[in-house]
Amino acid sequence: MIEIEDLKRVRVEPGDIFVLEVDEPLTRAVAHELAERWREAVGPDAPLIIVPKGLTLYRRAVDDGSA
Image 1: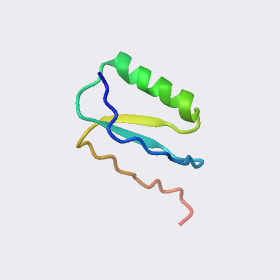
Image 2: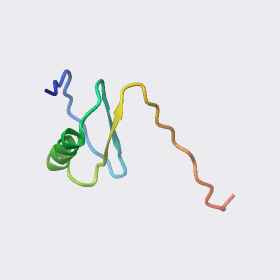
Image 3: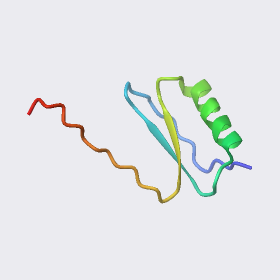
Image 4: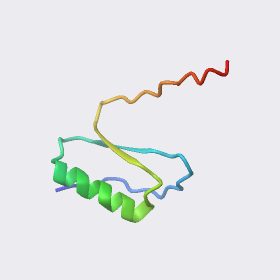
């Protein structure tokens, strides 16, 4: 069972990507269900990434050749 501890209202801005950290591994079906519910609530323009707690995501800048 999925337990939601803290739910907050967010304002989604264009280009936002949301990361959901989970304590326990999820089955593909549960991850799909979470992502589907997210799309229903927020819309398709706010991607959701589901990762295990403790995983760090980094942004790597891409050189566009303009410098």
